[in-house]
Image (cartoon, rainbow, N blue to C red; front, side, top):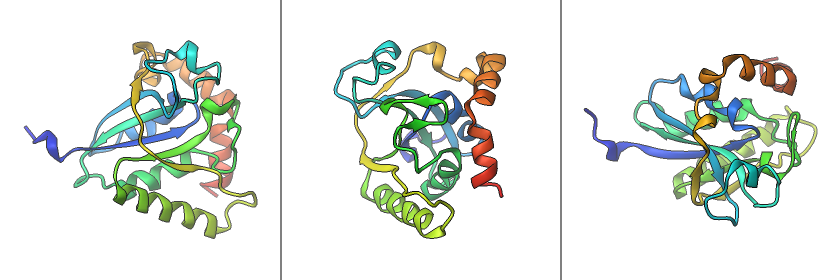
Length: 178
């Protein structure tokens, strides 16, 4: 058994957390991916609280990872192509402040790497609009209700339907895979 002290945390907001789990969950070196809420001003928020857009929380995922098998910069390389970093009013068909994008750093190295990666996206010329994804200090992370965890596995049909309707995959194909 590995020593858990070598593991680190990364926290990313990219719109609906259902769509953010699967890309990370399938990678070697990722120990866990938890859906939840962070960055707000309400303790122990529920989904019903957060979806109002009034709590200040983002829907986010918190990843526990082995930095030797999957370094933080690789997480960033996987994060950016999951989102529209130019949309400050939500992501795809999910609208509201709870669906904005953000990278929550857990230490100064993560902050530096996140800022560098955001600058590379800005400099790439890939987008005509400004990059609005925030880089913020990690805050208390509240795991979402159990039915949200691993939603893509537990509710495959509903997950696929929501993802198809969202426009996320078309955006990824147009801006990241072209």
